[in-house]
Length: 601
Image (cartoon, rainbow, N blue to C red; front, side, top):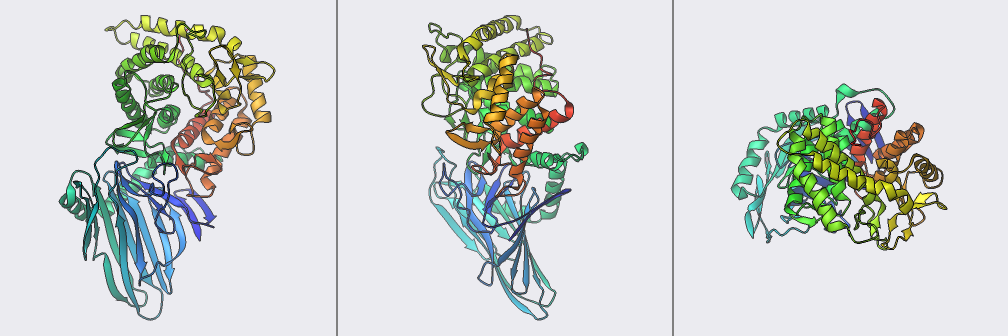
């Protein structure tokens, strides 16, 4: 079976040795199916075997959908992805079948167009049946009420609704009926169209009416979808280099992950496992989102995180579910990451003060009040170092984490810069005192950082620190963070970078934990690439960027940035694509990550 990716000037081809999942999406629905058309039994960490299917978050509409011809599934010859949609080419005897699928950009609707061609010189009897398996269940960890899926079927339509919540419904409407029989003459073609529409407020009647309405508008809605994706690929910014195709794929991955759901307008973190809003994922991605021309998505995601943080006294959430429930209230480092993300968006959008003022209270409350009040011990040996869980979610680490301390130092400078930015445009509040408070805290961290954290015999920083000053070195990927944020001294930064490049990096990139977990995530590899470029090692940075781009052709859906290199975990991941965009633009602009930041001193 052949898999192809065709989008404008992007053409990739692979031979499929096994079946793989694929994703289609719009702002209010996404579909995770299998390339073969088999039921998508995907999901290992949350809803085991049920993370695939058709989702109109915060609920699932269908477990599976597919076509049979004369009672059988026709042989799959080719699977073609186009980002905005997919097409299967099937063959059964002398019948050639084309199935085109896409999800509407604005409505929670899946469209299927079917064409069956008789290539024989004789007439052929055709019995077409379109099958769906409804399953109206809420998202993982939802507190929504859910009952049985009740199904009603007629020749032209299938309706399903939730017995406990009848307003939650799905309608499947087919032109000519879900089951059709005809005789095709030589060279003749049978065509039909199917719409699947899901709603959590309209019930049976609303779903049915909207599905019928969309069935009549299928061509203009497809044209709109294709235009949206073409523009998202930014054809005006083509540079003709070796990474251009990967850059456009990254832009289109960002588009695929855009959601506008109950919790707001935000980028999904990764599929199939994480259709949720994550604090750290957004923080790492806002630079790439803005540089991709999607500052609206970055701003709206930060607004959504702000809203939850203010309900939590300033604690920035780690994971918010599509139904609005907070699954994880937040790791320590997500507070400073949030503040720096706000500052980054202010910088990249050349904000005149509107966005900065909207976010200032949340930044101030989170950083100066909550982080200091809940995650520091003023009477301890390290009164200025926040403690608690951080990016590396491993047992056995000491309470004070390297990445949290570094991101806090960076955020304090970014917050002071934000305050100075607002002081220049807003006279209603005295921002100078906040800026001075933040800078004094940052200076206290910097003054003792090297003495507290450096392990000279290893040429590395401790990964974590105990309350008695004991340094613990596990060799996690977070070694790169002091370099990334600019806290490490120049000499030690160079020593750490050389140690990592020469002794840690494998054929795929930066391992998670040297000697203990050699899997390579795109995130640490991207941060290492960013740091290498910033420190002048452009060749290393480009090589690592190419490693991230290699996930586009790794086993799985062509053109998606996976979570692991070469492949693994989520088969499309936000920070993989967004950080690729940021690094690509950094290489072409000649600017380092911090070169345009306004840092108070």
